Image: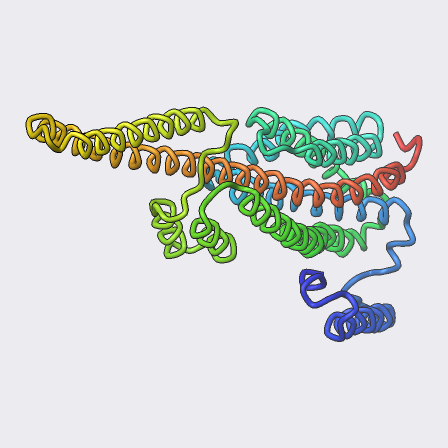
Length: 379
């Protein structure tokens, strides 16, 4: 289940492993049914209450993966929270268990355990649904509430451990307890295998979309060819060396484009160009005038420093225009980076919400099962 997307669900390796798992499981059931002291007492599943409660406790193990594994990945790898910061948010799912577990026990004793289990699965399902609405900008308070809802549901649904064995014969209580506890661990294992496998697949697709969008943003940006090539290399392989090359390319004066017309820098660039053109005309006029008045040595000598000063001014104006272009290019690069980062956050968050949708569907399918975890009128 973890490697199905990597190798391909119809690949020989996955097909052989799946077929082997089915065959070995079948052999285990057949051999276990023939033993006088079986490892798993499959006949206990004839009791609908035990079967339903076992499935609900299995679901509790599955729900643990949603909060403590998948959501933790989101906090640390997408939101870039530290482990302690992420722990402060996830711990609300544990704190609320302390509240709901005794309340659910009292509810089960006064009425019957089905209502505690039904409430628990519904709350976990609602928590899973809320996680499908995650955005990158989601507040810490909202995430704490989501964790609290899942924790409340987990506490209530954990009473399935009690409802499972209440109608089991005393001599079978030990193995029944072991089976239902194993069901929770199995739920956790399968939850990790399924949800992490789906998450890895979604993240891989998200990375592909992020790269494609990044290349498109670079192609549409008004930067020099050298900068565009350097940025493409950074997108293809994000290393410190490629970042250094991109920085050098951004500082180069070679083929720097003019600022886009809609920017404020464009007006400044146009103004500098007009001043430069006017100064060049003035320098040309002074040179011509000097040539025409060569017979007037005094004027000719006086014009030399003016012409030199005008030439220096022209060079400085050219540097100013290049500087404006570099600033405009730097602003464009920053905009491209912001677009890439925004797209990255959006696509990775979608990868997680898609995974949470899978979790939500699995939880929702177990809601009707909770109604069979106790017998009516047993009090």
